[in-house]
Length: 353
Picture 1 (cartoon, rainbow, N blue to C red):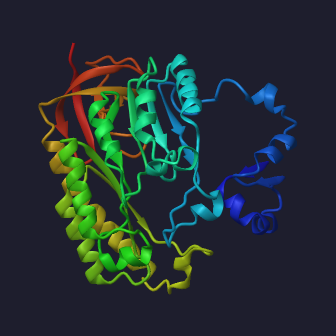
Picture 2: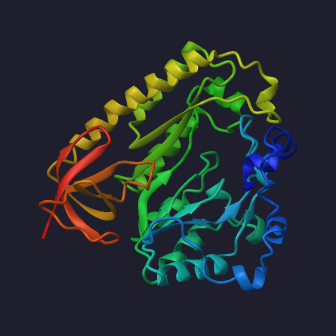
Picture 3: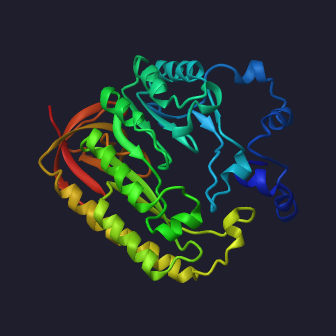
């Protein structure tokens, strides 16, 4: 049995001692060693068609690796190194290969999307990449994940507004809203600057679906800081929101702080924040009743065909359910769906013939 990934990269020696029954551990940068252990011929066995682990109609497209940001809580640079972009031509070629195999939706991912191109082109080139990927026949949706808010290049949003294939959706992890916490997190942005950015994004693409994540229980987070975060979430009314509890990561600069928020309080703050978001999500979903949306169907589960709107990414966002007894959907195809009923996190609808 082999183990690979971020933990193997960072804690290989410790893991070898604690779990000796594993045959070998390989970090994120040790692909050659893994291939040698598997007796794989790189050119013969691996160059060519990419193996897809998602359903065949959507795929994740990693556009860069690593991160140059210095967030005090984050261990990604320690495990994955600095930012390294893939060339536009290579990504277009990969997208074309995926499209030939039936992929219709690409989720662009990176530790930091907005840095794309800085290392190899000496300028931020995500808009250029979006234009190139939009030219790939067969690709119908392009979705953006993990964009850093500080010094956010609004040219990305302008490209989204121009390009019909780019979903009006942005995953932009904000982490917090209280300025003292943001400063200790080294996020390089204030609440006021964040609010101005969100206003600008929404002005350029009205109706854009914004997903974010928040981190509660960071060292020194006071009751007042948390209340400010709650106020910010109520004010901004994000379409999608996830909450994480702070974890003290060895080697990060935040490790020097005292982990002074009790675990029970972290959990309670996470619960409270998600309760606020649940109300917002319910109200937003209620507004969708009676409206028609383009839906991509991912699977059939029990009595329902299950799909997603443009505002939803797989696994993490809302889903649209249509009853299989009265509707028929082809998995991997789009259909127009009228929303008949809405709950906090799901929509129920009917396919329009």
